[in-house]
Length: 158
Image (cartoon, rainbow, N blue to C red; front, side, top):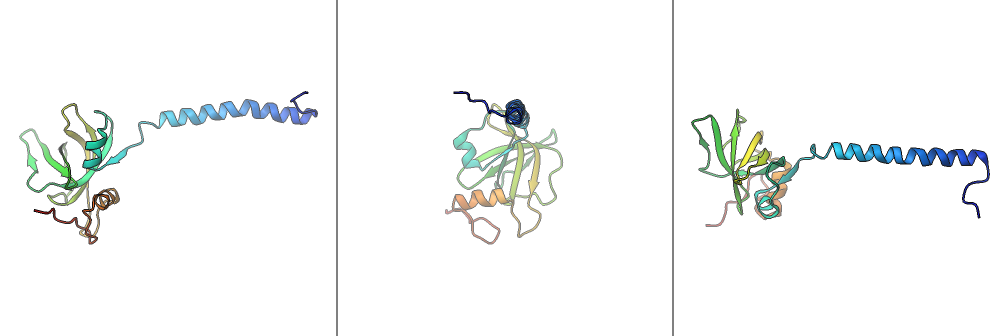
């Protein structure tokens, strides 16, 4: 039993598909492999604590700036803690903070953890008015049961 088509035209089509399919598969594979570092995952502090992202891997860490945690260091860095009321991580950032950055407000820091567990932020994003919180932060707070619904998290129980 012959598996090849009988007509010459059908055999050419089969040959064209047989040549094009591996080339297309290789192109898709190379594209996905090349974009692997462009994907930036979002973690809340509790998720980051549970999943332990690899040191040096670029991620986004979002939550609230912990009250009383913002410190301006002598070398020009700013250190603060990002929390979701269940876990918190120290963050260091060198650069200009957004004008609306302040304690108790939603923030997303993009960067990577160092070997000591401090998040080294390359970029810090803050909410832009009193009714807006970054979607990732709001979703993380909702998942943890800390969302009040009016744009601000619930105060932690004493």
